[in-house]
Image (cartoon, rainbow, N blue to C red; front, top):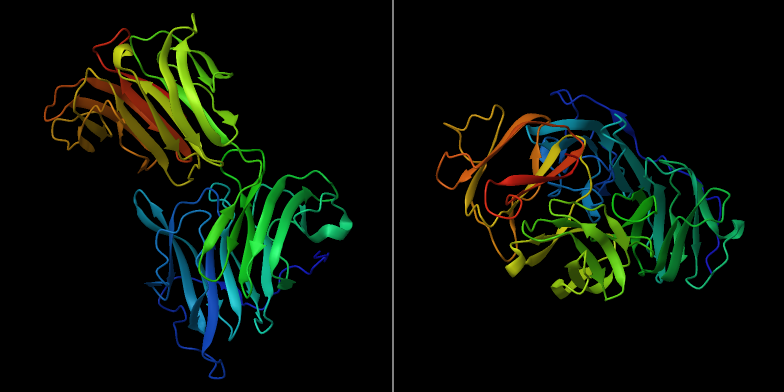
Length: 457
C-alpha cells in the first residue's frame, strides 16, 4: 500500500509573469545562451465556464492546440527551452478574444503543465503553471502530480490507497490541498490504486475513483476539476499522461434524464422503467419534467396514460443511459404513430455566450426555415437554418448554437417562403445560459405551430 502524507505544494521551477501581447513581447530566441535545447509541455483546460480556446505561442498555434474544450488535456510534447509569449484565445460568437497572456520560460529537461483555471464569470481566469523534473530511469514506477483545480470545491484531503482499502485515516492522506495547491512530483510503484477525496479533516468521501490503473513509466498530472455533469460529487478527475487524457468520474455518478411531452393529441402520461420504476408521473402535453438522476443502465421504458396505466402508448423502448451523461427523452409525432427520441444534452454553461437549441417537433408544419434576427423582420433576411424537415424518426434540430447575449426574435416559415408560421417576439438571451425550444403542433393537433420552452427560457 502506498502511504505518503503532507507532500509539499507547488514546485516553483517555472517563471510565469504577466505580459502584454504587443510587438515587444519576447519571441522564440532565448535570452540566455546557456539554455539547453528542449523542454516538455502539456496544456489543460480546467475553467468550468470558459469556452473552447486556442493556445498560441509567438502568435502561432502551439502544437495543434485549437478548439480545446473544458476537461481536455494535451499529451506531453517537446519545445525548445526558451521564453515564449503565450496567449489563450477564447472562441466566442463574435470571434476570437484574447483572454490570457503570459511570458513562459520553459526550462531545460523540465515538464511544465500549463493549466487554465478559474471562472470567466467571476473574473478569476488565470494560468497555473506547474513545473517538475521527471526521472523515468526507474522501470516499474509511475510519476504523478496532483492539483486542486476546482474553483468551487473547498480545501480537501486527497487519499491514495490500494483499491481494497475501506478505512481512511490521516495515514492515507497523500496531500491536503486548497484550490490551486499542487503536490510535488511523486514516484509510486505502477499498479492499481484508488483515489478518494474528503473535506479536510473529515472521513466523508465526496469523490471515489474506484480502481485506477497507473501504467509504468508514465508522467501523470491528476487534476481535480469542477464537476459540471450529473451527480453530487463536486469534482471529476482529469488524468493527463504522455499521449492524452481521460476524465474519471466518481464511481457513484448517475445519469440525468428528463421527459418532454410533445404529442399534441395524447393525454398526460406516466413514464415507467422496467415495469417497476415510475420515473415521471402525469406529464402533460407541452410539459417538461425536471431532471431525475438514475443509475447508469439499459432500461425498458413504457409510456402509459396517466389516468389508466393499462393504456400503453410506447411499450418496452430500450434506453441506454451512461454515467455522467444528461438526456432528454422527447415523445413526439401523433398518438397513432408516437415516437420517443433520446437526445443528449450538454449542461455546461459558458460565460461568454448564450446557447440556443431548437427542435422541429411539429408534424403539421412540414419542412421549415428558421430565422434568428435582432428585430423580427425577415423580408430580406437569410434563414439561420434552411429546409429543416419534420422527421418521424430522429427529430431534426439545430444543435447548440452559440449567440452573443442580447435581444433576438425567432421566426419560423414554411421552407422557401416568408409566410410566418410562428414568431416569438423579442427574446432576451443572457450569457452563461442555455435555451431549448421545440416547435410543436397546436393542442389536439394541426396548426398553428407553438413552442415548448425549456432550460433557461
